[in-house]
Length: 285
Image (cartoon, rainbow, N blue to C red):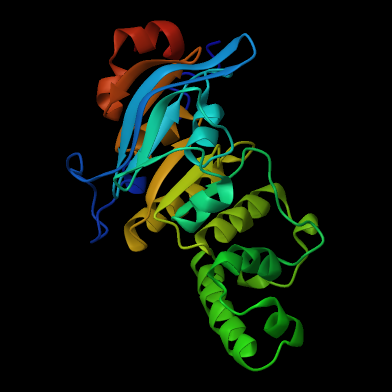
């Protein structure tokens, strides 16, 4: 159960910077609630994946969802973007209560998602994979898209320009034409992030974006996550097991344990919470 430790990775001030590049001297403040989860419960047969979970995600923040394996973290993200529909409770997004929303409807309203297991088109290039994130933004009908002429050609060039900007932002220019199946794991995760960014989301859900990465790859991904939040103004909710990363880049943290909410607060508040120490983080330091 205690699969991570609070001292697993050092706290690094260089990851937490303000817009001028200097270190953050205190917690950032957020007021507007973008998404609210109210008393959500989810069951699969007799298995209770989530039980009476409530928390919110405020516009502009980096919100971490943590907990040991089987705590219900991915199930929670699946409820937020419509893969699962909870039997009890409500999810309110941008002031509107959602009922039975499907993933494509969530995407249209500004929610993008990456997955714990990479879900890319392995035979397609980096550029083409990221272009798929623009599909919901395309307005030309199927006829014009098939002809690749006239209005569709102009529109596709505009979308390609936005994708090229994302490629530059993620520093993957040299692999733009490489089939993603040939790329190392860390770069595939970066391409998947690029595809999600191509949707221009207001809320970006990241399911273990740094799982399986080495230290250098994690540092790069941390930098990109913070830059997405800062430069694009994207609200981010992420699941992550590396406690050094969580405590370093998150504004607030909600802790799940066996499908129940254990704690909710700033990284410092969560790290010093005795229930979290006992149930998840292990020995207090």
